[in-house]
Length: 118
Figure 1 (cartoon, rainbow, N blue to C red):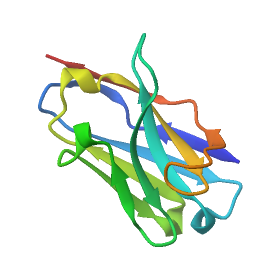
Figure 2: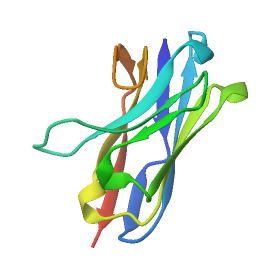
Figure 3: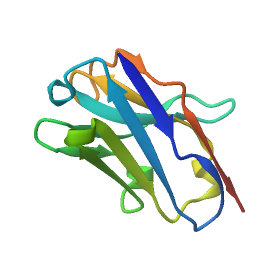
C-alpha cells in the first residue's frame, strides 16, 4: 500500500492550493480516503474524507465551505482543494486510508507541507 501526497507549498492568506493523493497497492473502491493535518506542537486533526464507493464526504467544521474533497477513481487519486486559506491552516497534510470515514485508519503517506502567510 502506498499513498503519495503532493501539491503543498507557500501561499498568502486568502489563496488556494490543490493537494493530490495518489494511491496504489490496494483496491481503491473498497476504502475511504481522508486527509488529516498536523501543525507543529499541535495534535493531529482530521480534515476531510471521501468514500470511494459512494462519494459521500466529511469535513471538519473549520474547513467547511473552504475545502473540497474529490476523487478520481480511474486514477486512484483523491484531491483536496484548499480555498480562502488562513494562517491557521498551516500544517503538514497527510492522506490516509480508512475502512470507513473516521474509522480504521491503517496507512498514510509522508505528508505535504502547506504554509499560509499572513
